Amino acid sequence: MEINTPTFGGRVVAVAVAAGALATTAGVVNGWGSVDQPLNAMATNMDLAAKIAGSTAAPQAQQQTVHVIKPGLEAAKLMRAQQLDAGQHVDQALRFAQDGYNARQAEIQRKADADAAEKARVADENAKIAAQEAAKRPAVVKPAEGTFTSGFGGRWGTTHYGVDIANAIGTPIVSAMDGVVIEAGPASGFGLWVRVQHTDGTITIYGHVNEIIANTGTQVKAGDLIATIGNRGESTGPHLHFEVWVNGSQKIDPQAWLAERGITL
Image (tube, rainbow, N blue to C red):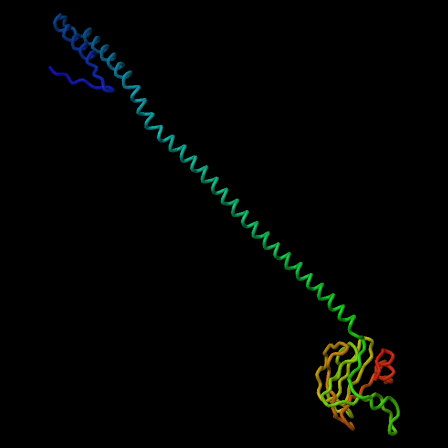
């Protein structure tokens, strides 16, 4: 009779099976009529075989279990390490991004500060130049170049309230002092005139002009071009009629006024 024997961990538990078979045979031969004792012996032997098989299979089963679990642990460790590494890379990237942003902002601020400093320097330099130019520029200038032909006072039975400076038509007429043009246009007896009010309240009159350059409201400096000599109105020839008014409308001798300020005609 062929008996199939189970294999546990590559080993044949033939001894246990054989022992069981012998016990069964002995029971039959003796003819005891009872198989309790042989069956018990067989059960005992089977238990022994199971224990042997179990003791043999356990190490291999344990080893197989380790082989199954160990890759999982290694994978978990690797995944954890990768997560930590990725987190470190993210933190590092964020730090780099923040550092880059801070550097750009610092550069922008540096340029803004440099531009502001340069603008302030230029403004200060321009103010110094303007002050130097103002110091060089005379406060009062001669209103036009030419020949002095008539002074302030009585003339031909009337009063001549200004001085006349003769020159060719188109000769420049300039403001005698700093001020603002308060009127520029037609005027009775003068054809065209320009009136300039100065910072001290004095008003200067420029009559018989050929062309008006500075219109009403124009801010002018001493020496700025405001008109040209002409022959308009009641005139005997091309010339500038120049008057000086103080206290609003009081007409004074322009020649004396100019002389007090170092200007001769």
